[in-house]
Length: 299
Length: 336
Image 1 (tube, rainbow over the protein chains, first blue to last red):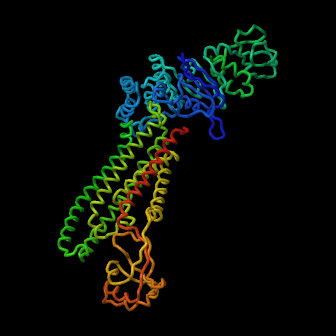
Image 2: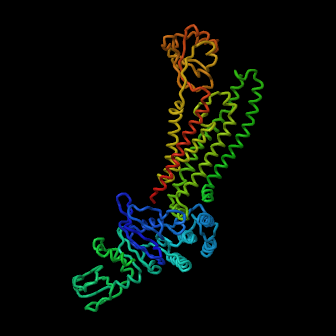
Image 3: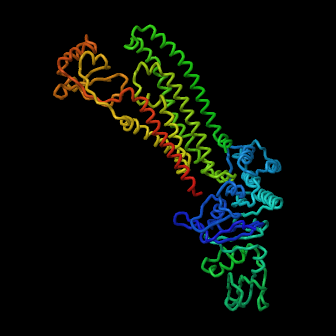
């Protein structure tokens, strides 16, 4: 099956600053992909490159096998919800649905109207008068009712209150379950992603730090707590992702594809949040030797 | 996309149509009255080609209306550039809603093409209607004043308003695309448009076609066709002729009164002719004839009116097309 996103040495430069550098990814279809990273890590840039709003400075990217934004058919396959969920403030909700029906080749009129009705929104209301949550729901309706094969969402829940956030994610999960849509979802809140994502991409400082299925990633990483020692005294085949030392104790996050051999240490599973934070904190230099391996795990 | 363009343009369209409707009613009511009055004046005048005294009061009584309508036709292209062109792309870029629209299976190129085509057509139509209204309304006044080349007249009659409107719209659009902010784009549009209008009228228009040079001897026959003669505030200064040559030509430059050896004469030398209250222009001409005076002048003949109109319109339309092309070039390189 064609990858949702396939990128080779993808880079995007704004002036002198690289917003995204040397990004190589191959995300298989059928996943809900969480894209995590601190502010300014290049999340939005990557997503805009994937929907064709930006063109790469270097390298290449294909989405569902096609060049992003290359034509009507390509745009029709990709749903995109931009950051802050932009809508046309002067147009009513009904106008939005109508423009969706006019412009998209596979617009699901019934689905769109049902969505708006289930949200309890008045179709005659101007989009500019909607609350942040309602606007996000309208923008999501616009992105999903065209029946995309992949849905790209840029920080969709960032501006929503917890209740609206829950409703939004529920609506999203309904869409995924009903139509088998693949989703790429960015956020800097890991807790949001933990509930819905089964695939993870961690970006920091314009570079990919970690890629893989959530289950696999949590399975191969462990916390190791032991008496104070150097990292290189750990068994061979174990990679140290992070190391912290107190006077008497050392704590390592390790990655090992085989189960840890028993030893004089306590081995504990790693939560998704710890995993993401650890990889975000790691400088690019120390991530160097690990990077090819991470890419490997994505294939 | 056509529906969306119409839906986004609906407000401006309503305002424009309201203004056009009001202008039409105004032009029709005052215009019919004026055309009737003019027909009656012509009938009462024994030699309309020479003129009658009451033609002056006829022109004077419609001065305010003429100014108002000319202002409207003159301002319309600028307003189109500011309120249609500048926000066309800038407003969406500013709101970020192009990110939503461009992902409703519309490529930016198609989005731009439909918007540009529909609004450019609307701009041309609006300018055409306004120009037609004023050209018809003012036809008796223009016939009497015989000054079709005056800046305010030339730019508000015939086909020139169409060129201005298309250009101003394209200018606003491309500036909106480059600046990405509606308000600054509006301001820059206005500044650039006005600057070009002034430069064009003052520098380019007189030189669009080669002008004709001529010499006019001063005698009774020639003086009967000019509008006046005088020295200005200093009676010993050079003597000027007002509106020399054929009345419907466009006089570009004229020398002061010169004698046969080509030297300017001063008012004192001919004061007996100029200060004689009993002489009309023909009489002054008779009086000046023995001095053997002449003026040199250059002009655009009346026949050049329509060639100049089409040349200027063509120039503005070509600029508009160029700017439209620049929009397509730029939108492909749009960096979000």
